[in-house]
Structures are given as structure tokens and as C-alpha cells.
Image (cartoon, rainbow, N blue to C red):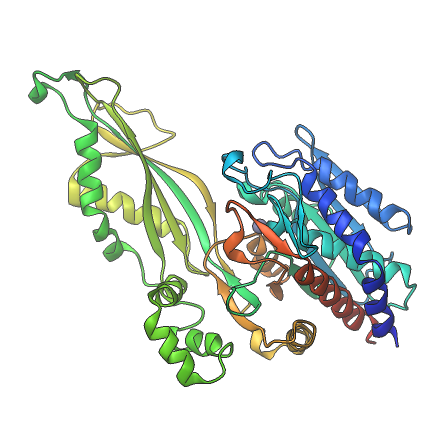
Length: 452
Ligand SMILES: [Zn+2]
């Protein structure tokens, strides 16, 4: 009976929910600089008329995190819904079909705008689920905690990272959902049980500048960088082997669930090299040189050159061995002195290594044994009318803050929207997808928290 009342409540209020989501998309929370407090205030306002206890934790310049609670009871079972409020910059606004902050609704079906998919729709759906459960005055033995966070797009230290170390620290969570968009269109929805880590390293070569008419008297920093780049592949030999959390064959099986038969899957898999590269990215660490900068004038030998190395780590893979491997490569194979960013160099020719960001991957080891996760899966199948699939995120999100150190390993990513449109021009969300996600979040929380 209660589940029907949840569904009919959501159906009745669809328009209000769409307007709430549009308001979130229209409010500026482009990060950098952030301004997430704009979004937090709208959520607080939305929850306040049903007496949901909401706390806003401001920081920096107009930034904030928000926590809202279904009730005051933390003793039985606690469920965490986490979503980030910040969005990435829209890029060139004229490239968009519709202005990125207009939240324009097309044919009553699709909402366009920055953040519509990543992830204001997931965040809105979670806040709505909380409100629906409160409004219906259903009986709960456990608690649902909504955590709307800042800073996800720039590492999450001040958002989820801060929240789990501070206001959320005393709460013992039994299950957590991050509402990132997990649609793999044309494949069905994914439920993600692991994410890769992300390490960004700045490499700076320091040479000796001079007149370019007498290059032998100088040391060209661009040539130095070029030596490093040419030898970069050798770094793999210095990195200790890391096992992927899920092996290639198993990943293929998880993906095959989305296809009518395994034969059809195999045929499509063999025809689509993108699928193969996606799976490859989930079973190995990867590195890519993404930026390079050097030289100040046409006729000056450059004494400095900078490059950015973007490394994606497997869950469980540590940052330190990667840095050590890079140092070994530069010292042993190329023969340059490596200076730490903190030490002042006494020689003129050397290489500096600086970590720009480092977040380790994370993975829920025992996801296959979880009854709760199975319930979540079945609910998604029912609401979306299609079997979802379990999978891993090739990028990184905030899950490692919640999963790692044993805080709440049973954390998943699931949300409305398609991963592909996130961060892209003409980002959009289907209203049906958004409404279905509200139902999943509300009914899952109801089932999870009302069981004795
Ligand atoms: Zn996101």
C-alpha cells in the first residue's frame, strides 16, 4: 500500500519536481569557483515546508555543503544519499543549441542545460525522495540522510571528503548511493560498484637558457622533456603489478546481461572497438600526457618546460609507487636529477615532479553477496522496465571518500542521465528518466528503512 502511495504522490507532483530541477540547473554553481551555496539554499527551501531538518555548512566564498535528515534516529539503520551541487563550466555558450543555464524544456520530454545530467537531476531526485517519504508520514525504523556536496568537480576534498570527516563521521552508514548519471545509452542503466583513482602529475624540466644561435652553450628544457616522453612507456616496468577488481572475462559477462543473448553480445563486441577499449580501461592502469608548455621567445633556448601526466589508477593501486616509478625512469634511464618540489636545487639542470591531485580508486569487494544491492537491482529493473547491469566507473567520483577506510564500503553509483552527455555541450536529461530515478530512490529508501 505504501509503495503505491509513494508512486502516486510522485506521479501527481511531476510538474513541481521538474520545476525544482530547472531551478537547480538555473542557479549558478559552476566550479571553479563553486558558489554551491546558491544550490544549497534552494534545496533547503524545498525541504523546509515539510519540516525536514536541514543543516548548511558554509565555507570559502559562497560555497557550502548541506545535510538533511528524515528523522532524528540514527540507532537502527542509516542510508546515505549523496550528490554534488557543482557543475563544470559550460565552455563556449554559443556552441550550445540552447543557453546552458536556461534549463529549457523540449517537447515536454527533455531538459537541456549544464548540470542537467551531471548531476543536478540525481541530486534533485534524491532531495525529492526524502521529501516524499517525509510528506507521506510513513513509519521508519531507520534514517535517510541526504548529503548535497560542493567541490566534486575539483577533487571533493571540501565536499564529500570534508563531510565524512566532520558532521557525518559519527553516523554509521549501512548503505550509500551517489546519484551520478549512470546511463550507458544505448545500453541500459548501470549500477556502479567501483571507480578508478585519479592522479595528476606536473613534470617540469629545468635546463639552461641561452641564445639560440649557440645552442650548445645551453641546455634545452624542451629536449629534456622530449627525452622523458620518448621513454615514458618504460615506466610500466617500474610499477608493481595491480590486479583489476573484476577481470576482463567477468566484465564482459556483466555487460552481456544487457543483450538478448551472449552470441549477440559477442558479435556486437567484436564489431565495436570502443567497447573493447572501455573494458581495457577498467582492467588496467592508464597514463596520458595531456598538456605541454615550454619556451618564451623564438630565439631563446628554453630553460623550462612543463607537462601534465594524467594517470588513472586501478582500485587498490597506490599513488606512491607511481611517483617512485617516474623518478626511477628519469634518474636511471635518462640520467637527470629529480628534485622534490620542496627542496631547492643546487644544480641548474634537473627535473621537478609535483602532484597536482591524487585520489585513490575504490571498490565494494563483496557486492555480489549483498541482499540489499540485489533489492536495488530488482527495483531498478522494475521501474526502468529493463535489466540494469553492474559495472565499474572508468573515471573517478566521490565514492572513494565513502568506501575507503571502511567507512561505508557498500556504496554504489546510480542516477538519472547518460554518462556520455556529462561535461558535454547540449547536456540534457530525459524527464522520464528523472521521474523514474525519484521512484527508485524513494521506494528503495522506504524498503530499506522500514524493515525491522
Ligand atoms: Zn558528477
